Length: 199
Image (cartoon, rainbow, N blue to C red; front, side, top):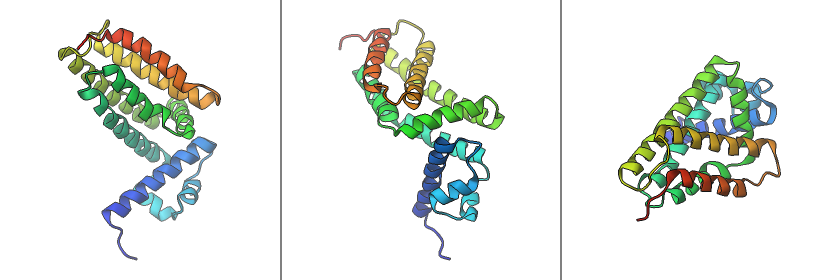
């Protein structure tokens, strides 16, 4: 059998993670089997276990990929003179543009984290990394005079993280939820806490 190129290997890994996301969202963490994921991804069990030894390992892989996507989206905040507009772009990319099954998956991972130490650790690492990166961006914007927060930047970052979680989870449990309108209102509240200074 010919060896897969690096690009082909990454494509296969991504296909496995995509399949795991769909399966976990559709039938839940415990009801989903590794065979279910193989079938959805169109691969053999041997091909799956080369990459992921367990469902917990799959959750860790999904979390790492999501973390990297969120951190990449933060480029909209790094040097933007309009910090609120940058936040709107992050919300669009990380929440509003995401398929609905990802919101369901977020709830599933959160529930599993309450009883599975391995998943709890994965989720904690994700939250710590994203919150630290957001805090750093807020501190940079404050130093540069682009924002003037009405509260400590760490507290503001935590509040923004909670808002993002709430929007994501609400999309999972309320099919007719108007995330665009809710997001617009929440962004206005956060913008007030940023007290943006005129340029």
